[in-house]
Image 1 (cartoon, rainbow, N blue to C red):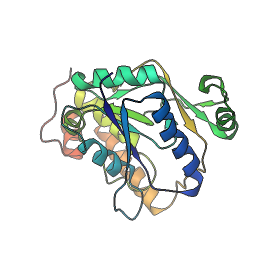
Image 2: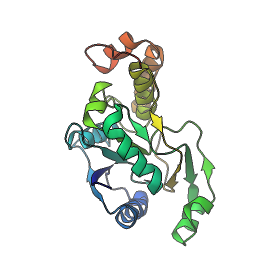
Image 3: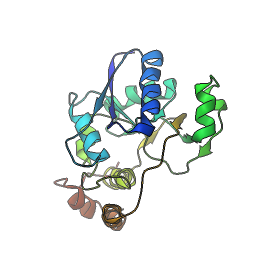
Length: 226
């Protein structure tokens, strides 16, 4: 397969280092055609949306780029299928239909050599993050991810609603599984989290209304549904 880029939003945190090292090693061993690098911003808090936007902006307009979380690995076949399709589809692709949160026990099994699809897991229904595949042209057409979501929470769900509303279809999924490794959970509380929740409510109100969503995300005119 032709080369492509994988960019991982990453700000070191003690409980996440081992997962990050596993993920980067997994790409090196299993997807040798991929160039993997990390991305962060100079924000005072970790802003996933800003990291993802910067990751996409780092490649040519019609080049496929994988945005992978630092704790999540996909399956090779669905990932390559998503990369090939994303180059021409004009839609964002998710290389999975099932999201397995491995937890402490499943992660220990994985590290001990158990195949990922045999590890203990919790199925996360409705997951829409972890690994994205897109092009800068597609990402910009529906506003990317909203950098007003600071810290943890909601940026991926809001992005999903924007994609679905402005393109008229949800992101394209490829049959497969992604596996999220254990780490300490982030705090989802406080004034910043409340602000994120309030912004998410604005996305819910705009969902299904291309004009309202376009105004919310800063797209000049609504895109036609397909």
